[in-house]
Amino acid sequence: MARVTEASVVVGGEVVGAVDEPGLLVLLGIHADDTADKASVMAHKLHELRVLRDEESCATTGAPLLVVSQFTLYGDTRKGRRPSWTAAARPEHAAPLVEAVVSELRRKGARVQTGRFGAAMSVRSVNDGPFTVLVEL
Image 1 (cartoon, rainbow, N blue to C red):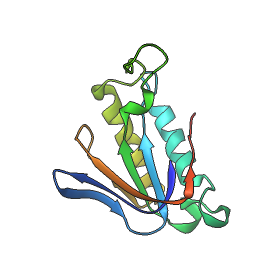
Image 2: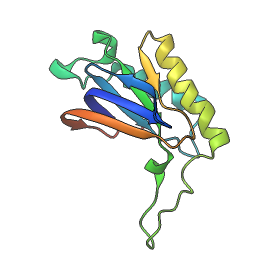
Image 3: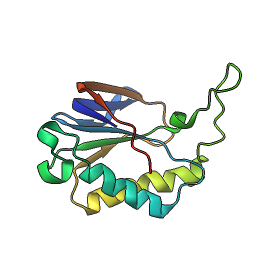
């Protein structure tokens, strides 16, 4: 998760999601063992985490979040010269959990934009700081 002043996701030359004010860019990786319960906890954590300026959160400021699915976060490079993706959830498992995180954020009143699951996406961001945090549950 990165604190940004702006960020966008482009698919096929079209902007499919963007934030044009300070907020968070969430690169969301789903592990093969993740569950719907974990998705709900992650949404709560992202919404409430006090990482914006002046130790504020998206919950307290109404700052937007751009959530982009990112299976490559679970690439294991410890052996050989190619990453292993075995820890990353299969698309049929990951897609509903990404949607669960997004839905829960919206249920909490968060302003959420998204990428497009499974698409070849170009992600652009202007990091604020830079300030990037790995959020794990």
